[in-house]
Image (cartoon, helix red, strand yellow):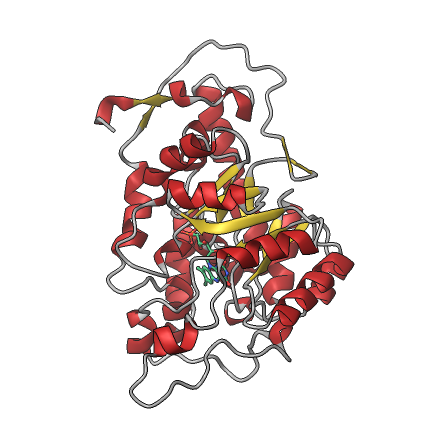
Length: 361
Ligand code: FNR
């Protein structure tokens, strides 16, 4: 069922681009504005080369790690992505099944097109829940309680998208959600887009008027015992704020370049954020991870684990759960090869010394 010529994550993206209806693909793959940040996420990895080490004793090597109470076989997580039923009829269920089959962890989007409770019931592997703080705290709290009751093991609060990015690709393609795909878990929540007075600003009088603030993070921290990660942090100062407001971890992310264009590549800001936090809480990274060597580089620059978005959505579109499992297994195998040839027997063994600075980065 999976075309045999698909051997890399980029192959999945290119195949999906051919197979998925154009409007849907504009949403699934679309960057903000001109796509500079989306391209930079990828380009950032090309600044580095790896340091070869030969004849090292790597017997007993592995990619295991312990992350917020979960024992994982590898450090590659599925990023939260909205509306997965646009890609494949099995949607979030297919994604989670494929991820679990490949020994991974799924982060389920607040805007999933499948009920979060049902997903957890059928889950074969660990799940985290991605929360968009709602304009009404009671609505947020209801989502948190549902996540707790369903057995989600952490909350990922995405903080980089209180307003939508300039999704020019979607607009040009005339994309709108089909009636049978919607954010079912937000039924009953007050919408963020309020009516704006005549002559007012959609951004400031609409979205930002009800957007979450730092005190809401401290409030949320006090409501739940689940580990709390903030996703979408790029600035070292915000990373410190996250720590001070009770975050247990952060995810360095620019939303895959889908929010504000012209933000820096995540790999480029990672070292500054890691430095600022000084090991107090784990730092994860997403954006542009397409190869096992990318995972190794992110780890060498201080990321505990990485999340993968678009390639897994593409794999879901092309092959359903089997495609997702295949894509993750490719990435894991690539990581293992990269570790073997750079003399790293474990994730802990991947240090800045694994990077060769021949390209001057
Ligand atoms: C996303 N992303 C995202 N993030 C989030 O916190 N909540 C969400 O609902 C979504 N939805 C979403 C939909 C689609 C189609 C994509 C591609 C992405 C962002 C995602 O979690 C992650 O940050 C990026 O996808 C990582 O970059 P790559 O791996 O796609 O390059």
